[in-house]
Amino acid sequence: MTTGEPLIVLDAVNKWFGPLHVLDDVSLSVGRGEVVVVIGPSGSGKSTLCRAINRLEPINSGTITFDGQPLPAEGKALARLRSEVGMVFQSFNLFAHKTILENVTLGPVKVRREKPAAARERGLALLDRVGIANQADKFPAQLSGGQQQRAAIARALAMQPKAMLFDEPTSALDPEMVGEVLDVMTSLARDGMTMVVVTHEMGFARHAANRVIFMADGKLVEDASPAEFFANPRSERAKDFLSKILTH
Amino acid sequence: MGEFFRVLTDNGQLFVDGFTNTVKLFLIAAVGSLVLGTLLGAMRVSPVPALRAFGATYVNLVRNTPLTLVFAFLVFAVPKLDVNIDYFPSAAIALTVYTSAFVCEVIRSGVNTVAAGQAEAARALGMTFGQVLTLIVLPQALRAMVPPMMSVYIAMLKNTTIAAGFSVLEAGAIPAYMAERGEPQFAVLLWITIGFLILILPLVALQRFLERKWRVAR
Image (tube, rainbow over all chains, first blue to last red; front, side):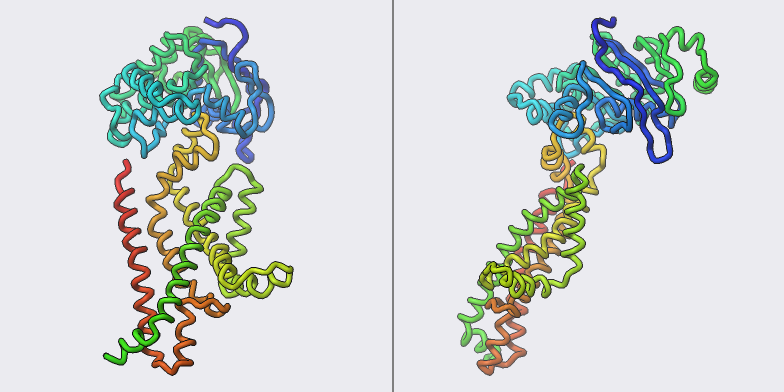
């Protein structure tokens, strides 16, 4: 699956929230086309790790490289980098004052300066791909959570990103809507999208991930294939975590 | 009753001149403070610490200064720096400088009503700070800003009367002229009150219109 140099490289990354060492010397590389699932107990730093990759969270030390370039500081260069990394949030964050189709076309038109007609055509195709083409003219609040999250995935894909970050994309959903979002993510993974996915969905980790990263207390504790991780977790923290979530 | 109307008809030109200048002052300062206040508001929510500090300092300095003092500064102190500005422009500048601090805070509080995730999603798409503000945050913040913004502008319209103390013939200057002409002050003040009520009506109507227009944007 992995070819050439890795797309995302984190090297000795540290971040503190006040006295809390939320990322503790984290190093990680994600190859092109690789799907990495990050799991761990809450407060382990996995969301922060995800958000650091497009610098929604600035880091205190270490380096993060995307596609061979170190992450730029604030400004135009950072905006350009962010436009190449799709992000999907736990709370969807669709633009509340725009229709679903406008949500999907706004980035291409305003950031990429694409022609509105072309952006609209691709936007409708993407909405069709995630199964909500018939919702194009509605506002986000009129959609179910699952539909909103699929629209948010379409919005990120509209930028034709090199990688996609998912920060607990199904945690805010009613249980019956988790499947429809995971289906879209699974099909993306199959199509070769590079993905970093913070999630509690062990099923998705098992069948769609190339690697599973286990984090605890800001440290990257394990980095293994899903089969290996779920069958033989090496650390006590991972064994403890898995026993808690898999016994139910 | 006839006497009451006579006060107005006999001095019609004075009322027209006074209220015309009041409206002029108001319109100039309204546009000026909307522009300056929006810039200050943008500074206060910007990611640049120096700009945030400048915005906060401006607001705390100007908002806590009596308007009369701001006028006095422009009319008496600025000429000492060999900068000569006429009374009317001085008054317009004083009102703009002062009102901008309040406009800035209304804009900032409006921005704060928009969920942080909205700006975050916009940044994640690669939008610049200006795009995040103008395309995503401000359009959603407008709804929350309308009522307090109108209060600021209504207060500013009434604040124009301070210019009378600094040699500007506006509505607030009418009573002094009328006293010289020996007109009954009670009638004069009532007419000025009526004048202001009439001027404020369009602002109230504008507030209603905007509140309806932006009511259900979701």
